[in-house]
Structure formats: C-alpha cells, structure tokens
Length: 295
Image (cartoon, helix red, strand yellow):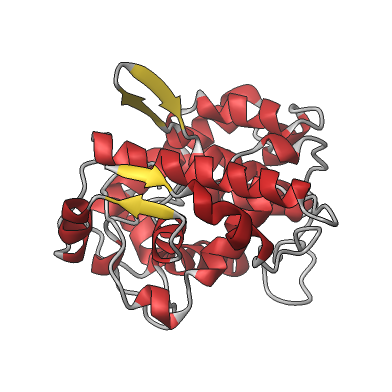
C-alpha cells in the first residue's frame, strides 16, 4: 500500500537545505527568561508526554496558533509562565478539566482525558523513580539518548509500538523527540543522537509523498482525501510511518555519500521536513489522520 521511491532519494537528498547542526530549541518560557534546568526538563517532558492527538487536531480550538502541536505547546507554556511548572505530585492528580483550561479547550473533549492519563503517568514515574526531579530523568541516561528512549518507552505516557505481520514495530516517536528536545534545550548532552530515527507522525510522510519520495496506493490516497480516519495499527497506517522512517534513513545515507559528504541525523531531517510541511502547498492537501496517543 505504501513504498519508498528509491530512485528519487539521491536527487531529493541533494536538494535539501539542511544545516550541519540542529539549532538550539526555543526556551520553555518567554524570550529573555532563565527558567533553570529543572524547569526546562519539566517543560519538555510534560509537553512531549502529551505531544499527540493529530487525529483530533482539526477539532481543537487553535486561536492564534496555526497547528495542533503549537496549540498544545502554547497551553503548557501558559501554565509554566503563569504558575510555574507542574510538580510531579501535582501531575499525579491532574484532571481533564485542568489540562483543558490551560489548553483553552472543551473539558469534555476526548483528547483532554487521554492527556490527563498521560500526565498522571508521567508524574507517577518521576515521583516514584527520580525523587520528583525531571532533570534526574535526563541525568539517569548518562549521556545516551538511546538509553533515555529505552527508559521512556516503558512508561505508559510514551508508549508507541505497533504490530505488523506479527512483528513488533517500536516507532517510539514521542520518546525520541523528548530526547532531542532535552538535548536542544541544553538539559542534556547526548552523544548518540545519530542513533535516533525520524519522529514518525503524519506530517513528514505527507511531505515525502507530495515530494515524490513515498508512493501511496491510489485508494489509500482517496481515503485520505475524503478525510477518512486511518485506523491506528492497521497495515496501511504502519506502512505509512515505517516507510517514512526508512526513507529518512536512506536520505541520511545519501547525504553522507555526497561530494562533499554532509553529515546529518535523522532528527535534523525530521525537523527540516516538518517545517517544510507548514508551507501552504502542503497544508492545502489532506494528510492521513489516525486517532491515537502515538502522535
């Protein structure tokens, strides 16, 4: 149903304007603020624990924000700037109504309940295992992004494993992006970011399809264009995400073979392609929507 157009990889890779190093992530608070390492760690782990729901994003009130992700990020930032970070014990008691209030959403929206469950799990894990310190979560990884991802993968709030033809496929989108965010924010200095894959969602595959790097079966394209939800864990949904991951790895390898070689990571390409997807020509066409807590 989905495949990589490998003949397109080399030329497409050479046309990518990717920087040698990813920029430092924006601070969790407003410009000029110095929130401190613990607050930065809390912000990114809190945000990434609820960085999902793209299948519901068309139903959210976005206000001045252009995307569902930015709507969620703005709500979390509003809380941190107004009342400080949520402590771990506060997260263990958070309700859908509380998170909805900060995100400026309907408290009965299905996504608010799912986010409250994720945040309660995050609070329980940080309180039980890390002495209520969010920075300690990063420190326990001892400089390894992979180690952090493996830890987060075992938490309910970061789980993201699909099954395809009897095989377990650990996409771990949000666990990996948490590692990248903590590194870019200066909370951690991970030496093995090159071992992370792209952060498998629904926007990067959309960009790669429109750019001719991915091929979708015409009937799958028709379903997406009709706005039909693609079931999470279905063969076609797994193929969309898996082929995007594979395509980005091929692009990384192609850039490494270029003359001169361009050493970039999958996470850097993910950032470039995600930002490319904000352009009007990509936003104008439907991407696949799947309602899950994976992305």
